[in-house]
Length: 295
Image (cartoon, rainbow, N blue to C red; front, side, top):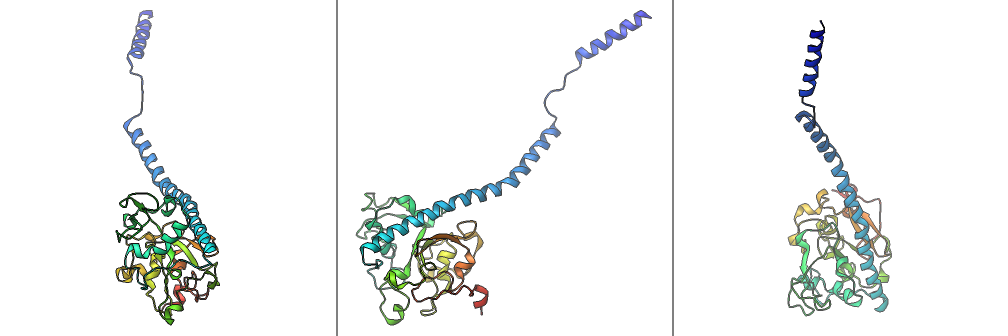
């Protein structure tokens, strides 16, 4: 009897000594953990991306305000007159160099860091421009390389636009109804665009007086478009209406108004008539929307 008990005890002890202790995770457990992590990433990434994009908005608004300050300094020194293009044509300035002339004049009057000309969310190569020189040797360049003491092939991202209505010399009575370089002529300064996120370096809106095609508003309304939208013939018809993927920021695109306040404006409002103004003769009418004016 004692022998059998001793043998049983010995066998149990031996079994415990040779039993392999469990360590780590089973394959099923690992797969479950991986699946949970993947699910959490899928849930959090859109929120993190949205938060990141929203954090860029203040930088963009600050850039616009800096450009607005430079413009106000220019106006103070030039009897409240915006700079105008040398060319008489209102259609695109004939080249990047020609179209950029008013902005180039402002830049040369109050030097600003090149970094402020790039919206932090705009990385489309279509808006990468060489600096060029100040005599127009390079028609597709901005013409500020000499001023910044940089080589003409040095490139920057230029993401914004100046209101084109301020920078063109009118050549007839019809044009005088929309183009005006006198800053004091604009009565709705808190509603009239001065600078904005834009696909092209000049912003211009639809105006019934000259019957501009509504898709010109797409420069600002679809500021993130992969097209420069430089002249009307180069603007696809579909860019004449809000396209979600072409807004720069979560809530829309950023605008600096002539009273120097800046805010993000929805794409719908940017395309609606008489909501964000361009011309000195336009009347602000918040009751007009895309729906109420559609045929």
